[in-house]
Image: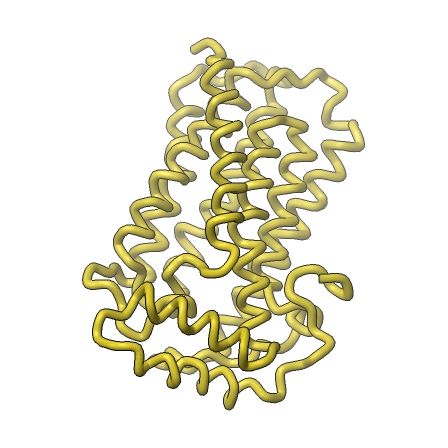
Length: 288
């Protein structure tokens, strides 16, 4: 298969624009899953474990199918592409077969799961096609500082992400659905430690591949989960006015049986998290 350069360019630009659009559109309210879903969930939901498995699977399956559909390269030929794509697949193997089976999250809205699955399919196609059919790495690339630095950042970010997920997962006893203040690891410094880890991962991957498709995915990740970390932080560590505004938006968007649950939502944050650490930042330690 030859390189479809126009397709790669369109998908990369579209992903960046989608990320920026999400950043602007959701600056005041976040996607309706997890703690940002209303007390009265949408009519059609999917169990969290099944939803994570189904929506993450395409990002693993599509690159693997692309790799299997082309001849195995000779020794030292195009090994860089396979190694970098394997790194991408490693993340989604963990998300598909480890994280999804261990998560204790609340049910996902069906629409959110389907949109995430479509995105993962397109992203898997973009990253896989570019690395296997478009990217050109010379014999010296594995010794290049960008390759080494990028992979180091990727693995550091993945370790941060996995460890933070472990902390979050063990905040609750089996069957609990309440939210608690996470402590330990990077949660001592930021509210969105798991999000920070994933952002570091994908910017490291972008440096290692030195490509527009990988950069577009890193930018999309920053625009999508960065604000989510910020809203988590603000709703846990701010005055009642912001909390009331956030809860009002959530209530108006996702409740059909009246707004009386607004007070319950705001009271939960105000009364439960009075001791939230004031020095803890949202996403970047000591800065933001």
